[in-house]
Image (tube, rainbow, N blue to C red; front, side, top):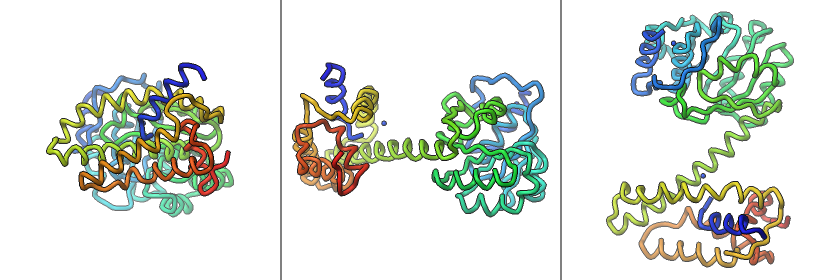
Length: 339
């Protein structure tokens, strides 16, 4: 075991898991409480900005439309519920009377609806109008649902990209905004300048299910981190410590812990979980102590118990001397973690 891997084990074991200026200002105002930042690093304008249609004007859909307007793209919008496009129209967007009129207005349609079913309900009657055009589906869907939509699009001669929005509405179009895409390389390349109006655009390959898969993986890491933070805040809160005071230490601590993730990935990719430091036996005692202290303080241990159960299961199968990264086997093979 190299020193890097040992250090990574130490770190990982400590961690439970990581528009023209007036148009721009008008588009930002259109979002009201969810403005698009105007200090975003500019992406060079297309020689002839691509017209784009946005279907769905929830908080995120409005943010997408505003970002396209700021980039100088003729933008058509549509929403099933009326009344959400007024500010965008004032900023220069065109409100379509119906979805059919909306998709006919642009060579590219960006879809941001509630779920897979709503996507199919809206797009299925529009198949003939969409033939020869491009659909970029940024709705949150599963990998299999993304592949089903891509297959449907292919059957009807519709170009299709799957996407995932890894940001919040107020950050869309800014330097911290990240979006993931998957589908044909040439299609992504052809529309990259348009897509980069929304934020950094990362292509994850031709499988339409890849972007949604990464989406869920990244969100899983986020939510479990939030759970750990909230548990910690609740614990120190029993001693009257304000959450802001706890956060001042939690942020640098969690940032430091993420430095071990690349080395943890080496363990995962190799499948070799041998370690000389802080084994699963060590971590079982450590997490049990966290559970005990939490209960002693009168708070729940709901966040911690699943981790402790994963550890104990690995130990019961004879892996107590191995690295905590071996927990991935219990996650991949629930009830049968042999790997």
